[in-house]
Amino acid sequence: MQAILEDLKPSERKVADFILAHPEEVVKLSVQKLAELSGVSEATIIRLARSLNMKGYQELKLRIAGDLNKQTATGSYKEIMMEGSVESIMQAVSWNNIQSIQDTLSVLSGEEVARAVDALAKARKIDVYGVGASAVIAADIRQKFSRINLWCEAYSDFHAQLTSAVTLSERDVAFGISYSGQTEDIIQSLTEARQQGATIITLTKFGPSPVAELADIRLFTSSVEKSIRSGAMASRIAQLNVIDILFITLVSRQQEEVIPLLEKTRLAVSRTKRS
Image 1 (cartoon, rainbow, N blue to C red):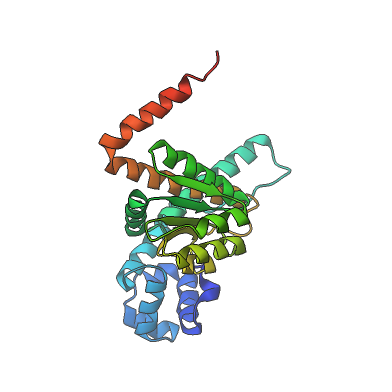
Image 2 (tube, rainbow, N blue to C red; image 1 turned 135 degrees about the vertical axis):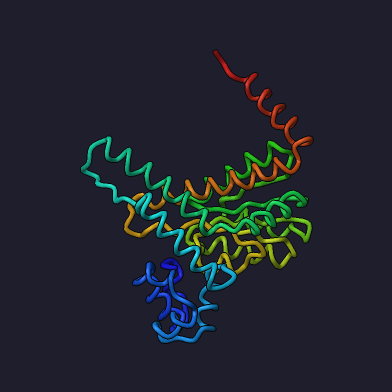
């Protein structure tokens, strides 16, 4: 809710502010009472729930209750003190990485993951676009998917992205990686791929963004608190975890075909090891 606060309509922002200020009270309220206390209509509350990818108010209340329990159990992100000890930095970085994965599970849709896996499994070719830190994620996707005999290419150069995008068709997938959802190179590359009829998958932080708006299938990670100096690290860990989820789901659906391929690639690499 905090991640999309600035993008909400005034009426939705009003009820969101009330919920953020009084979460413990909201889980006990009916939709009628919440509408009365926050000064909005019941329909506005339902729209807010749908903006958060939820079916309605009851699911919103359940998620609020779950977040309250999680905060009690785990707490929030830790600020990394640069003058701190090695031990304190180890604890803070590890804590934030774990927290980012846990938070991502609350915004990652199982339905969208299943749709992404279906599209990837059927694709003639998979283009993956990522620049900067996102290029690391794109390279990881290429390495994993190549092991199970999927035609997958990763592009970090803008011109290379566009050159490949114009050759795609409705049989292909273009997978755009951008934590911010604002990366201009990714926007232009996905726009071109979309014009060619390719299925568009995106992986961004939770909330509306130009990159996510281009997608047929939207995957999200948690929006790491801006005050966290390790934000780029924690978000990368969360993104890699989503890729692992996609990969293992793909493997689980095609075990008879894929397991032998994984074993062959493992053996091929192991033969190159030098003692």
